[in-house]
Amino acid sequence: MPGFFVIAHRGASYHAPENTMPAFKKAVEMKADMIELDVLSTRDNIPVVLHDVNLNRTTTGQGPVTSILFRELQDLDAGSWFDPSFKYTQIPSLETVLKWAKNRIALNIEIKGNGRKSGAPDFESQIIEMIDHFGMQDHVAISSFNYKAIKQIKKISPATSTALLNWKYSYGTRRVYLFMRYCEADGVNILARQMKDPLMSLLKKNHIPVWIYTVNNEQEMRTAIRKGATGIITDRPDLLREVTLEEFI
Image (cartoon, rainbow, N blue to C red; front, side):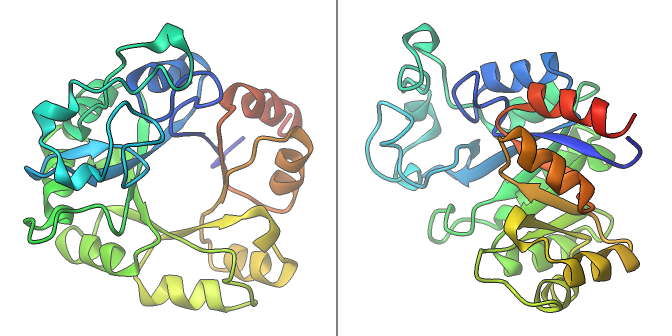
């Protein structure tokens, strides 16, 4: 399966609470090639791994993560919502995840466009500095729906791999490709239903990596692979690994 990535969405989040160390460790057990995770900033400007701006859905906390200190965040339970067996699971810092991932698995770090504290220092620079500190430059891709974040990453670190996330509204043969070029991104992350033949031909012709999100159905995985996906982001990396072994043999 040359060039194809099995990407665990927020870790193996079908099997463990999303964006937590148990989900990340499970993804490694399931032989994922990469872990996709989301990064926001706390009140004291610590990058942490969490999808939602508000704490309510996946933790015992309330309100926006940007209003809480990191030490306070560590007192929250981020696992019981998923299953009682994950009680007391913490929200990890990006630093913790990078340290753990080094020499273990690649990361796809999604920068949340509205996830920083107002007036905070440059979020993109913080992330790049951490990646460099742990020597993960060749093992990290950065993605975002926020094109300004992608452009800023490329300004700070031109060699860092980036991907532009596209909303469902981004139909049209060339729009996704042209906007990716405008952002100076290296690849695109699109929905399965955006894989129209003209767009896929254009991306393939220009050797653009295409990662599809978020696919958990076996037949949809097979269809995306056959249409030319170079990676799939899934909650079920174990299932996708089985599919790829069949599709690429």
